[in-house]
Image (cartoon, rainbow, N blue to C red; front, side):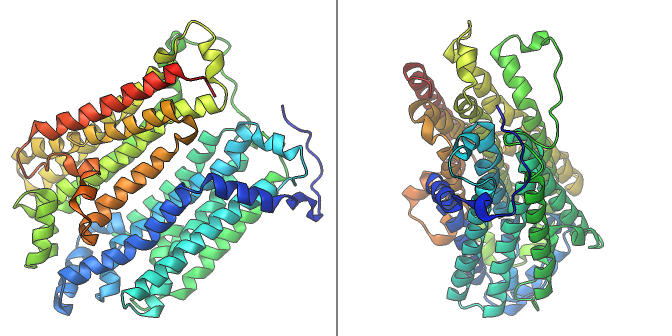
Length: 537
């Protein structure tokens, strides 16, 4: 049911209840938001500390910067290195956080706008003394505020490392504005479709286009980068003669997208989107006769998008690995660190091993997304009508769990093939083809552990099923920050990707693969058993 569209009001009543909704949203995100704010604020300074401990002279920093800028693949991944100072070199890879904070703000805004309307909660709340734009305003205030807080904390942490104020504030400002820009873009996307899934897809498509423009532009002439907000953020050039004027297009885009979101919101009914949903066929095809077919219909688009994304990343890994030896030079400390990460005396193979771990983390993100469809279907009250027929609980849940387990196999296979082929062509040695491909596949048991965590939360504590994203963020923090921050070994052991065999450099050992698979299976079984025993929400 939708409410009748009324003429937009020009009074302040449209914002009534914004403060109360903001407090509600903050309470609902009291776990996930502090996690990503802390991660994005603390990780960049730790990169600087790591570089400072590994490169002890200006000559080593200059050599590393020169070798990095000679690699088009690494420039496409992280952007160019604009200077040779400690801050510029240390924050080079931290440019990836401009994309990561954009993902976080997109999820935050869509969750508290379109997802609330899709479930009917927004209309229920709107029947009280709550203004038409209160929910949108509260969601944007929360996303903007979290982005600004992240930038401020990151600036303070960089200053704590003894870096200059200008560069520290420049990076923190670019980080905050990256989050704000895509929060506003997500607000626009939330007005276009009646589906939260499609709204997220639209916002992520814009983010993916921005990343592609930035990557292709930086690896080429640089022109295309100026059409991307991510490219503007990198052009801040912290610690390399900061370009403060890039704040103007970032703020202008944020302001323009925010105004557009409110304008679109005034032209639609609550619960509806501006893009009319396409009517389906009058009769369902035979493929939709069972839970597995229904799950395939719901999951196929997401699986295709993740497979393409991981495949492109695999191409970059294979291309970038060839020049890693020249990039590291004769620095013994950094060589020892990379060897420990990859488990091999070959720097290139060690680099591939570490990069495949990061690829596995991305695969785990897809696995969590696929498994959480169980939660979203139950939360939207679409599960009960399905189970009212001849479909049992285990059969219905298995339809989505299959994609959470088999989907990563497809995506990691494509990524492994892409990385193996590009690296084989680069080195001209066909013997490494199987080794690189195997490095992708050995990440699967660690990915399945995250599937198990998600299913276990769904079955035992369905209200907290989205906490699986927090678990992944914690694992990611340990993987990224653990070796740099010298965390205790028992903390490092909690992260599953560190237990995967260190292919392609070392020999394959089946023991960790079997243990990780057993843990994943036990978590899935426990979650399914709990789901069978509990009431539907």
